[in-house]
Length: 389
Ligand code: SAH
Figure 1: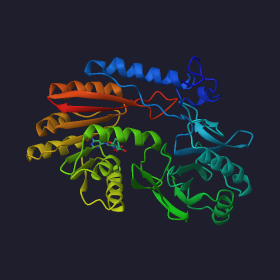
Figure 2: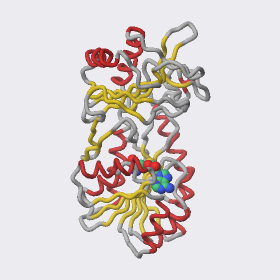
Figure 3: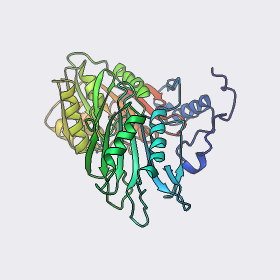
């Protein structure tokens, strides 16, 4: 029990909470947040089986390995960086955030101080003028590698060499600097063109013993400490051995499948986003895994095709987006009849809907384990073990 466990409100509550809106639960102590998430899971999932005690973080602060800040100017001309005020395009100035990596926050504040010295114009969204739109920092918590991405409205960045040298002098921990060009009138942070200003243009990090390459655009779990706990649970639930044939559905950059491939005989991953599939294939090579293959397709169509071809699997991992899985996916899965299904969910509501169908189609829920991936926010992650009845 922490010292604050009997308090109802969080003594470290964030002064920007109302404007930012990112941490919906930050007014509660961490123990209370965990109890709130546990209760949500129980309301929605208890009817399928016992909900185990949520796995929280020992240190629920500064867990985000990826930080991005929008740059702009106040009416009086002061340069600011931070997040957009919830529901608007006004920038709320942020110096530090209790969820973000402290080194990343410090780099962003130092860049803000460098902006006037290097005569860099911040971008004006309304007029479409100026250069600097965003700064994105990603840090490998295990590797220590740091990537800084400067997002500009054009490739015209006259002081880029001097700026990069000055930034590296202040922060020698930075291993690569990339200029990303986003000239479009869009809400997306990153554009399509890139110029590497220093280093390799990507960083690497290790998760559950596998190495992953992280480029400016690639998706990577933002809380690696809790992700390891989540994946370890998923592997425990899967009971893999050298004979297991595994499907990793909604596989993203292949993280779960590659961790499984260390033990399993064969892994087949499927993912809709072609860039993520490319990353999965290169991560597979980077880890010298010879027993994993990745396909770009809708997971439901892919499962239907496998089941129609009479293919089988021992274990199916499924990690769909917030909207959950599809009827087609679950019905085809039931036809393939794997012994075990491990469902990783970021939305207990769609999870409950999908478990309803899975239990109707011949599966029994054996274990439900919530894991707190995003302290201070209202997001809830669960991993569920199902076995064939
Ligand atoms: N398993 C991965 C990523 C899970 S996020 C990890 O642990 O890192 C969910 C993924 O599902 C995203 O990568 C998204 O692109 C993908 N996705 C969304 N709809 C899909 C569909 N219909 N078929 C296959 N993949 C889909």
